[in-house]
Length: 377
Ligand SMILES: Cc1cc2nc3c(=O)[nH]c(=O)nc-3n(C[C@H](O)[C@H](O)[C@H](O)COP(=O)(O)OP(=O)(O)OC[C@H]3O[C@@H](n4cnc5c(N)ncnc54)[C@H](O)[C@@H]3O)c2cc1C
Image (cartoon, rainbow, N blue to C red; front, side, top):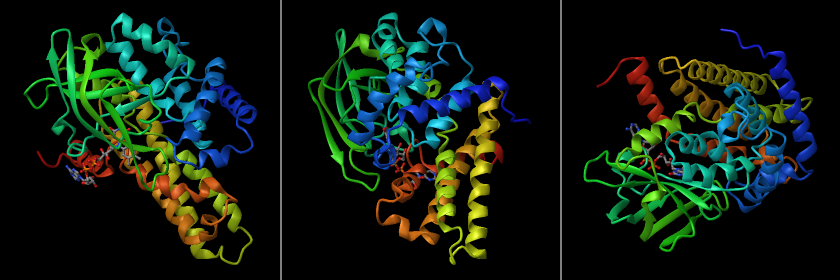
């Protein structure tokens, strides 16, 4: 196993660093410290992503036939890791370029590709993900939202919950039941301003604007808005989420937070042996998570069989982020008050949600038990 960057990848890292220097404003950290779905971050991403696209850094990994540059998925990963370290200025648009766009390339009709991919490439459109429901989170197959066929269209009724970005999104990647069988689910690409859709924000520790309930009451959806064949929604979702299997490179931002905190402590009387051991331990957790994620990304790119490393990597990322949050809380509680280090102050909020958003960490433990240790049914 060797993880050295090639000269081209080092040049790409320099290009991204220079881009961030040039395009992140002075008050970026105060913007980024708001929740990822806040109006401030979302609006910023709509200004920032078109510039990122112009510099060839938004979706260069997309195939040329769909407007990308056919770059290696490692290149896209490098960009994502560096943007995460900076506080993820792409806001919600990583959804589009990472998995919604690729799912539309694979399963979409020519009209759907024409309608959606161009805007995603420009970086100015916001999507939300309508999967979770009040009684269907980890057990997504229990979802109840129904799409009943009526001639050339469907009528959708149901409720989604915890939907990030819903208030500001133009489109939803929606899962709904289209048959009686437990697995008969379909995916729909629906505009959020369609009659019958109501969005209500949910107050949460994550922050303003991030989580919502979405109510669907007699929403008319055209057959041409269904992605892929009717009833084959799981195949589409598996394909799409395969791109997200290893999760987000949250360890990069966690390490930056840790380094900031250590810098704050250095030279102070409280940075004794206990704090130093805790810092070393949190640092090791982040680096271990990084190595596991690289291994998972490498395996995916070689289309190697699933060895379970993606689940282990995701769990390690969650644990590393939480270890950094604990370190900050234990050793620099003063950073939680005042606005001196806004991103350090809000790190714990991200850490709390890291083990739930995108699928609960405990589910990864189940997968590791089953697929790596061969336990259970
Ligand atoms: C910040 C944030 C953003 C989110 N954004 C979105 C979004 O945009 N779109 C969307 O669709 N959803 C979103 N979600 C929802 C998220 O996907 C779900 O919260 C997650 O899948 C867990 O489902 P749940 O909340 O229903 O919890 P449950 O599935 O009810 O789980 C509750 C607890 O029970 C445990 N548990 C459940 N089943 C098992 C099991 N089989 N074995 C062991 N333990 C188990 C879980 O690990 C968890 O600790 C978001 C969540 C958060 C926190």
